[in-house]
Image 1 (spheres, rainbow, N blue to C red):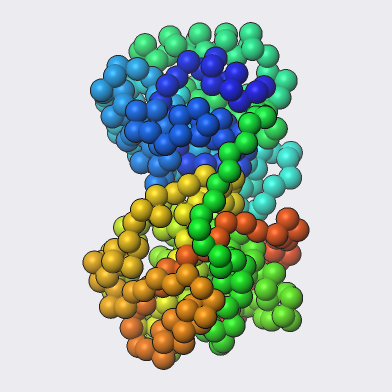
Image 2 (cartoon, rainbow, N blue to C red):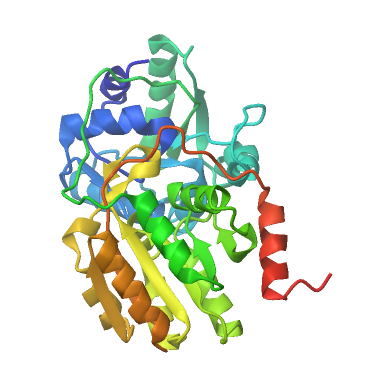
Length: 375
């Protein structure tokens, strides 16, 4: 079904969410139709944030909002869904639109497999009735389901449309860009080279894929890298504890702007602990590029100032290869928790590969390198 027709049939004029690759056609349609406007469409920091926005919209208008997300975001909505929207609490209606990564029987990446298995069950446990939407769903079928959902909304309940891969399409095009020149893959390579014998914890998405490819291309040892292929937004928390327990080893966290925003409270905790051997690097291309390129708000925030306010003793922003190399040299020689924002261009190689080791193999090899494998 065409995304624009899907939106027309829903009849909803407020959407909040976190972009998803399976919903990129819907996201493109929303960007062209509404742009980013607090009255109609906002890209949230995380899915729970989107639920809060939806609740505020309902309170102010009395109308039903929509929250879109990848199914990995279900965990982030459970608390506000159970303690805010639920009909036993405030009885606020909402429609969830969920991209079904890791659907059973459909090949996907390891971080999506279990989430895909429990996608429907989680909605059922949360008392949210769901409908599976695929490329064969007709307009009449969707109209019928929406009619039933309308009855649920009138009772202060919520409902979900779980979207299968390829179910939506969009002929329009939205161009996402920024003014920066440094290629992210080049930046990742510079960081990997500078890290030497230090360890790297990399965030989910293309950053981890590019780090893996860099090691492969240079005959490097993958055991020094922990690739956080799932749990977006938690890489710096993993890095904090690795650094705290390995004080004699430099620990580099390569984060993304979308991931940083998703659980930004981690900055405050990092800054309060201040491990002197942790270098927190945020690759900021101001976009959710891995899932389509929709913008984040990171281009409007002074991230180094935020890091300093959270307690990071050293924080800086760079936008070129030589400046990044200089910043890494300085931080490597210092004994201080350091924050480096790297302004990067959008874009990645079309043939960018994926890790060829399993997640468990990655964990085991990393722990052997650290000497923490007790088996």
